Length: 266
Image (cartoon, rainbow, N blue to C red; front, side):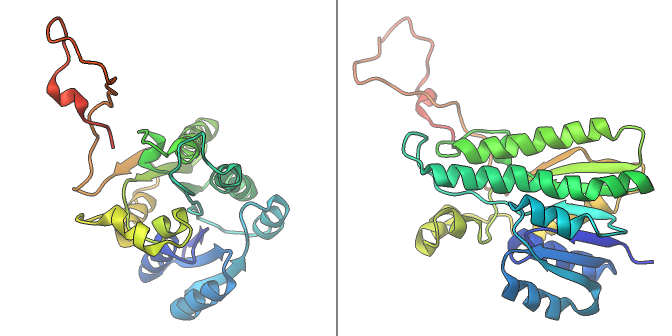
């Protein structure tokens, strides 16, 4: 009997790539997204392997509960729906952007998980995989609330695992770094030229790379639980600690700082 993956944010990027990857291996998929036209296009592409295409905004608690809690035999919930908005410093940011990130990246994950989890526990099987981010581990200028939401996702996944100890339900948090998809277009609200600069001169992760990692975690033997998996492009790493220099001269002696300390963390 084919296994079934429920994938949120399936209309582009990581979600669409994951749907294709699982279908290629004989899984059935339930695809969820806000853009109905794209959902139907993906359904047409994947054919009978799509058992349902649900047009849904994960921020809408009542709609999520009504649509997802009635589903049976979901083997994998992939909490993929999420976004970043803007790179402004905290004192300049649009509060609506902060709220949208909280509502999508935190509340959406909560609503979808709560709708699906009871039946997984009752059947004593299943897997919840959530797409986190390196931003939940490492700060960067302008990451403010986005990084905070992904830190929540990380800790929520850990606490779910603690709650589920003694069951056969697995929980995994996948944490990609810089990855080229529609992510930056959304972050910069359709400014494609600005989005391109994020990846200029690099060989970033791509949706297919994330799909491969998700599929790997999902298809390990059932006694193996990947708690957290962080991945980056070879072009990305951790920066030096940021040090701000005042305009007055730094004392020439008695200081332990080195010239390298002027580098900012990225």
